[in-house]
Each structure stands twice: as structure tokens, then as C-alpha cells.
Length: 327
Image (cartoon, rainbow, N blue to C red; front, top):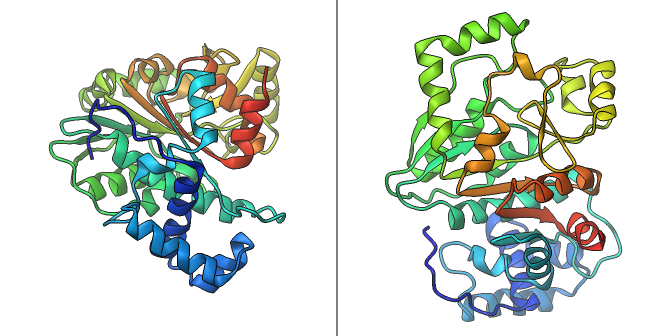
């Protein structure tokens, strides 16, 4: 769905909560009793909230993503970090019990799926990354065609239990947008820099990488540099290599490329062996929707925001609050 340039409607925190409840009921298929238990409210309260969400037009065919972007947390994130929009997911409003990562990620993915439909416009070229978070977003998207959209895979393929196949993420999002899809027919990481250089020079691969120069929208997440990073788990980099990158200032990992605290690329292995979008290509995209789950991604999220690598941010409530607490 395209966004227009008219002034934003002043939605409230209550609107944002109603939208989240509607997503749980209509999107996830939870019963009213299950939602009441999750949110720590009574079932009649949930019934009233669902009725109000319909009466006020928050629920039509899909939940209006603009409502999700309009809570106080969202507005404060936009003001603090210069974002065009911020989307904050809330899994257990009013409950002292924190959701587990799976539940939190599932709710964040549903909110991010609505954000995708708000950000993508007719005629756009959209780059889609990989990973657990982006796979969840792709799986949560409803089918909502947008005219004349092209989807491009941002990073090559890799077989791993830890990292979702990048072509799967791109194809799913393209199908839901009824878009053309250009997959990147190459491994994400090669065994040597020389082999990677040779493959990049192949006409088919070169043409696919050339499309990444003119992205209107980039949809991606960011990994941290902790010992459990997917780079180590997937065998892409050794613990010693990641430690070296951290020593050099790495704070996050985007498509297997390290970035420092200001969002600048760090040229350390496996950077020279990667077949993927460059950090500067992401930065040049007109709209950059970055989806990040968990407080453990705080440093990585700050690197994205301080480096101008996000125009639209989708995070869970704990991470949003951590971001707002930073000096």
C-alpha cells in the first residue's frame, strides 16, 4: 500500500494497543480467552477492544500499520533518531511476565509485515535479506498485491540450520506482493576471496548484483557480535575472527558484513568472500525498513540508527525502551 504525503492522523497509545490485540485475534488466530490471559486482562475487556477496533476502523481487511507506528514509544523513537516511522510490538501489555523469544519474534513479525505494506509503493525495487527475523516477517505477511514491484535477493544462499535461506525470504515476500523476484544464484560466502571475485564477474551474477545499486526499499535485520552470532554458528567465521572484528570496533552484522558503532563497514573476513549487498548500497536505498528483535541487539541497533541505515524501524517494546534510554 502506498503512503501519501498528507499529515499523519494523531493515533494514540490506545489505538496501538487495539491494533496489537486485533493482530493476535485476526492474524494469529488466538481465542479471546487466550488473548486475555496473555495480556493480563479479562475476556470481556478483549471483546470490547475487538469491537472498538472494528468500530473505529482500525480493523478492515488488515490492521492499519500506521496505527502501529503511532504509539508514544514510536513517536519518541522517530524524534530521537530521525526516523520516518517506527513500529513497536507489544506482546504482553499490562503483564509482568515477559514473553519468550519465540512469542516476541512472532508478534514483531506480524507488526513488521504490516510495516512492509506501508513502506512499499507501486513501482518499487525492494531488496530482501535473510535470517530468522526476516523469515518470520515473510511468513507473517498477508497477500496484498502492490503494482509493478520488483523484489531482489540481497545476499546469496547458504544451507544452515541457523540462518534461513535468503531466496526463501525473497520469494515469499515477492509472492505476497505479487511482485517479480530476482534471486541471487550464488553462495552467500565462498571459500576464498579469489573465487568470490571470479563469481562476481560472471555476467548473470554481475547483473543481479547491479540491481542492488538502485534499491527503493531495503528490508533487513542485523545480528550482534556476541559468541552466539550466526556467523560462528553457521561456520561462516571463527570465534577468533569475530573477536578480531569486535576489537576493530564491530557492533553489528548485516548480510555477513561487519559495521562499527557509526554504521561504517569494516573490511575484515569474511567480507572479501561474501556475495551480497554492500553496506553503502543499503545506505543509498530511499527507504530502509530494519526489523530487530531483542535487547541483546541494542549495540547493533544503535549502529544502524547512528549510521543512517534505517528510515523505518520495527522493534519489540523492550528494545524500544532501551533505545530511548540511551544518551
